[in-house]
Amino acid sequence: MTQDTALDMKDVELNEIDPEKQPMAAGAEDPPVGGGGEKNGVVKVKLEDDDDYSSQAQKFTGLSKEELLKVAGTPGWVKVRWALLILFWLGWLGMLAGAVVIIVQAPRCRPLPVMEWWNKGPLYQLGDPNTFQDSNDDGVGDIAGIQERLDSLSTLKVKGLVIGPLHTTSNLSDAKFTEIDAKYGTLDDLKKLLEAARKKSIQIILDLTPNHGGSSSWLNYNVTAPDSELLNNIKEAMNFWLDLGVGGIYFNGIESIDNPGEVLEELRNITANHSSDGKARVLLTSAIEPLSDNILTILNDTASGLLTARYLINNGNFSDGSLGNRIKQYQQVSSKQDWILWAVRPRLGHMASAVHEKLLRVYQLLLFTLKGTPLTLYGDEIGLKDLPGQPATSSPYMQWDDSKNHGFSKGDQAMKSNVNENITFKGQEDNKDSILSVYKRLSELRGKERSLLHGDFTLLLQSDKSLAYERSWDQNERFVSVVNFDPDMEISVTITHTNLPEQCTVVLSSNSERKEGSSISLKDLKLVPGEALLLKYPYSG
Image (cartoon, rainbow, N blue to C red):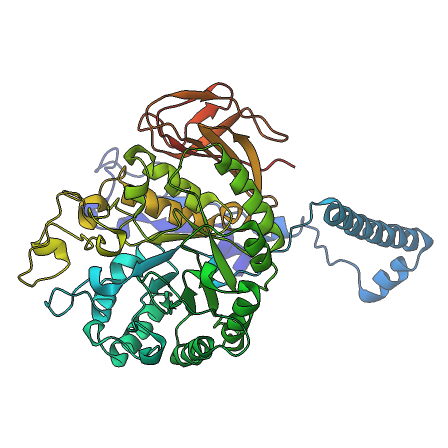
């Protein structure tokens, strides 16, 4: 039998299946119908031959290589290829030209200024370690105690700690500027502090004011650049401490120096000589009495790396209309010079003892949003006040928590202060409206927002009761600071200026009624007594 015959008819024998599964016959005893009928249960299926279909299909094999080459050389295909090639290059050149136009017409990014560590965050002045933290329960704050509190200080985003003076002196003959008073610890303690602070990106600035706390900060000596015994001792001490690894040197009472511009330039050269890539050193200076414009001009002529303090409060008058003018003058100076060191008051003392309680947030806002570096005294972040008495003996102990001696010391000394009752660092940490929380928020904003960090200053409004200014940098968000200096009266202001929108977004406010992120109008803006308000708005080209 051929394969064709086998495919033409195929029997499927159902009777070979399990008898129980066979279909019932019409009559089991009936004879088959017709002599040649099929057996019961046999089905014949006719299958079509697959060759009938394949014979009808046309198999496409494509063009051979020779045929393709022959067709490709025809004039029509040559023209098509040239047309496609030209279109490709024209499209590519068009995209290149468009990219060039976009780059040329796009606003140029302003070059970022060089920023050292003292430009990037606040400086925290501990002053005499005696009142900060006692590590050995003798009732005297010490260097090791400062190291114990580095974790808390790092939450403030501070970049430097101004500590000391650590030396002892009453006259030039017994001045020991390279030795540490034993009550504060040892040189090894200071080395450990330097290393621990470095790991938290905090620099230590050492106060080398010769006669700290005395009637004459410079021992009644006429300090001049040439041939000064005191100046030579100071230079030797600066080299010693800078070699040890301190990040800078601080001097107070520079109004006592004859020809301060020349003397301080010599001292600044020492810090500059100890500076290297990644290890810049700074010279900080301040005056007990406000400096004359003449002295400020001389100091402004010195090179970078020298910061001289400017004060928000002069002669105890903190709501005078001259503040806006002084700020404008100082900010113009800072645009020509490198930087300004902002402090609240000339004489050592806490901000809460110098201003009305309702104005604490006002001065915090000014310190952190003006162009320059904020310098705050220990405890200013929680509103700590000076104790009653003379300034030299009225420094309060730092109050960390509600434990014995407010966490300052575990010794037996009783260090209660009715003036600072219920004021502690820990007690304000979880309160978003506390002075500590405002300090932390402003410090964080200043560190990450370019407009606040190194932006331009524009005075928008000034009066006896109010002040408003803008900080802006290139294409970044702009910030507007608005304050009401009156602690008792609500005021209304309208702020207008070129490119300033009619409405801004609230960043923070001492007025609890204002919600962060809400939009407010700058027309007829009402400020509650002592309100500190920070706003922002986006750049628009």
